Amino acid sequence: NTIGIDAVAMCVNDLVVQGAEPLFFLDYLAVGKLETTRVTEIIGGVVEGCKMAGCALLGGETAEMPGFYAPGEYDLAGFAVGIVEKNKIITGHSIKPGDRLIGLASNGLHSNGFSLVRKILFEHAGLKPDLFLPRLGCSLGEELLRPTLIYVPLILSLLREFEIKGIAHITGGGLELNLPRVFPPGVKGVLKKTNWEIPPVFPFIQEMGRVEEEEMYRTFNMGIGMVLAVSPQVSGQVMNRIINSGWKAWEIGFIDENRGRQAFVEIS
Image (cartoon, rainbow, N blue to C red; front, side, top):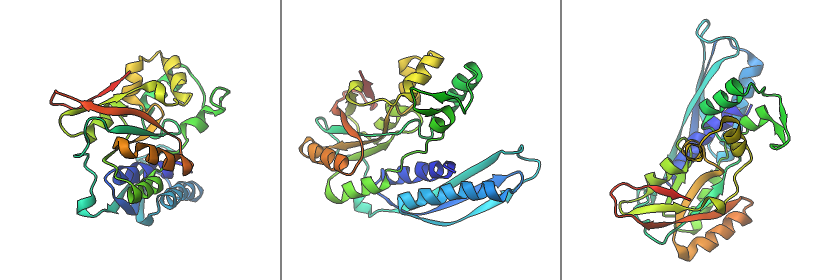
């Protein structure tokens, strides 16, 4: 019943980074056999995600495909449409050296890196989803199914009050690959990893799989679900507004000059 939240979150979070307000979401669910209770729970998650994002579940399709899916397996897909005034689209073009980078906390894996997680925790370590892990404070299954945070209400409220120069949704590829997408030519991001809290699930995965730290930062969000680029003049106000809204956030780095042609991120 949380999978639907993930489906909505990955769409609407990608919309809001451009300054767009999500309007509606459509889903597609394919199953081998239509089981009313299971389908109701899955779509219930989609409904919950749409409520969190403030958008409408406009419709969708459910396809029953006997023989195509193994018992208990299904596919869930969806897409969202949003709207933003043309002159207010956030492109990152005004980002310049000296600007600050504010990281919004993730609550765990979100929806990325699961191929590696399954290989390490289930195939290699032989762990079971119902295993309670004290360091995580919950079972392994509960941790892995924790739904992606939906940042839409927070981001839209910030955009009404502040100039946000660039926003990056940290998904597959982590900070290293997602953040440079919003940078204009001639700049780079400089991040200090001791500036934010890393959820315990990440060091747990790293230890269990003996994963190199660089690979962790290239695969997972490492505790940062969204990054905002703002001028130093408003960074303190933006931070205060985020924290007063009940969210966790940190100033995780800054923008520096980059003489090379390709934007990148330094993490130290």
